[in-house]
Length: 143
Ligand SMILES: [Zn+2]
Image (tube, rainbow, N blue to C red; front, side, top):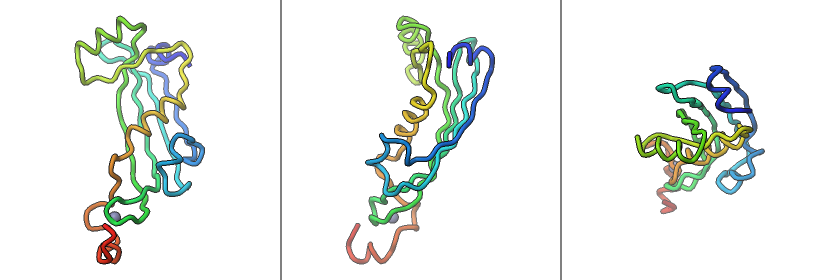
């Protein structure tokens, strides 16, 4: 798809795929169950073309406190500005170091973009919510 045209037309796309299909995730997961649902919307932010991306997934990870697998509720929501060239990308990043900017390629691969955000959204140290760890394993000193 052409992302700048997508943004200007306020288009939207949504889909779902299995986590087992994501090769780059394989080493991070404790199981192949789970799915990714996503939605992409074209928006203008202060006149600049951008993509709003929403990603939900439920990967099975290993809790680093009790070492038991658990289903992690992952949610990502963000706005990514689309720069037309390197100069624009640099200028926008200088304007606001906190914004997310990518170079808009004429034919962007939506799936790769979603996988990138998914990988970045994984917890560095996966852990159960407080109080949900397997108490028996902690008692055995497995933490
Ligand atoms: Zn745990």
